[in-house]
Length: 216
Image (tube, rainbow, N blue to C red; front, side, top):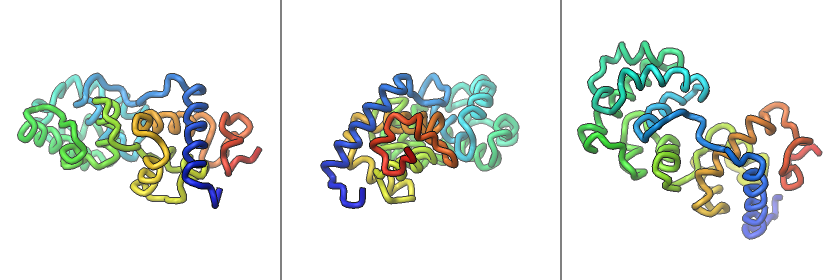
């Protein structure tokens, strides 16, 4: 794939997307949420933590703090207790309260809908903002690059980069904007089901013939 042209890479990327979409028609955001506020909170908690663990923690958290106003007025030690099992709980609790406070003070209690405003909130970087924009608002602002997306994009020859920002930059060049949000979910599902970090099951992979790293 070293000399692959941009046009050919886009064609291959389109075929990869179509096959993965057929394989995982129900691919979606794995963080349980009912609104933009809940997704923002859940995504902040998901840093260095599994989605499954976050989903076990958030019901009690949302029951106690159902909106930004209630979370903004929370005591940090109370939030720490609720999110303790997600790891880095002190910093996460501080960020959650800070995020809620900023949303109330600067955005009228509503989660903002722009990358600039979202990424300015405590605990919300570009990755979290992309998650919220794409999944809560249907705005394809960028590609969420987690460990699965980064690994698969490199294995599939869609990027040579290793930093999430540069991987995202490469992916948005070869996939159309309307596919950016779903692309992340498809790669994450495939990474969990087939393209394992240590033992990729290439014999089960629907895109093995399109992947330069295939062992088949």
